[in-house]
Image (cartoon, rainbow, N blue to C red):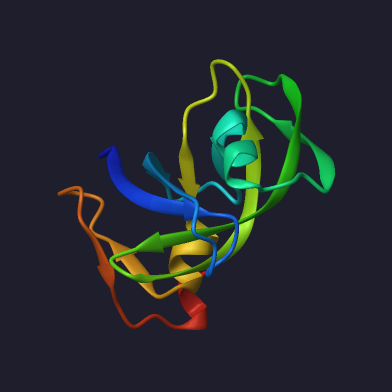
Length: 121
């Protein structure tokens, strides 16, 4: 298994002026992406619900969730985002980057636009 990371721009919306560059670990099995809560709040992203997540060790945690805009090389889209708390690391889940037409080689830390089909999900 290869760990792949990618720096992306995160904003409140596509047209927002405030932005932050965040280095994400790409997790092809994760449904949600996670950005530190203080970063999201500075960008003007607001949580709209609280979700309970089951961790691989059997524990459950509750986190606030909102929507943010993620961008790579000028292309991107909006996706649900977890407001990370102390000790949480930035994470980019698979559905957002595949839905935007991005692929990850998962072997050389590169993400790039690609053609994908519904069966890839």
